[in-house]
Amino acid sequence: MLQSTQNPANATKFPSNPNTFTPPKNIVATMEQATIGRSLVIKGEISGAESLYIDGRIEGTVNFADNRVTIGRNGVVVANITAKEVVIMGKVTGNILCTDRLDIRSEGSLTGDVVTPRVCVEDGALLKGAVEVRAEAQQNAKAQSKTTEQAKPAESQKAAAAAAGAGNSATLAHGSKVIYNE
Image (cartoon, rainbow, N blue to C red; front, side, top):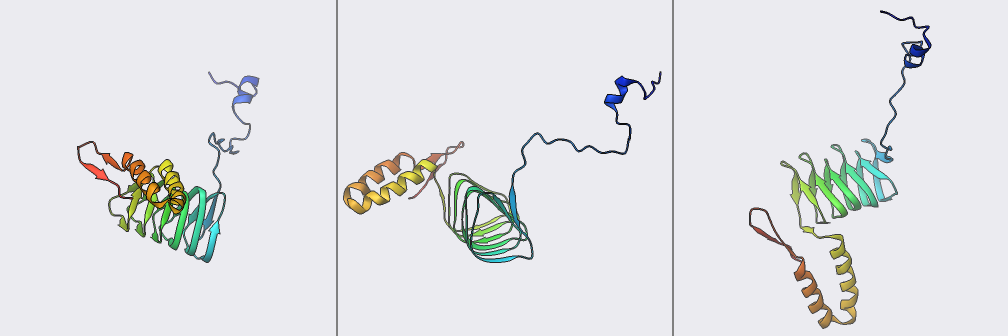
């Protein structure tokens, strides 16, 4: 039982020209991202209010405090990086400060110190430097304790040590204990 395409019920379901293409509508909002291409070399300070993908070379500082910085497979960064989230698939030399997460993929390498609440290092990744894992509240408390230390060194050091002792270790599921030094 074939029906004619002249039927009004079928006219709304099927386009009259079968070669027209209607792209699907994205339900998820697209995220803006700046890209530094493979052939670009930038020396200096880079900052912005959108995510950044680096596939070229950067020397200096990178500051994207509320966004993600991704170093691609061809990316080479010789800089200190401050970002909400950092993903490394290339080569980074410098210190990293994350407010959310650091992710070093299997082909990535990092030479430098890290301060972040969460870190993920895949098998095969290279990490050389100190890693300090602490919550954002601890980062703020430590910054406040440094300003207080200048005013009252003896009292604030005791208070900071007592406050740090409350959250400077973690027990893993299999029973071993990890202690974070401050």
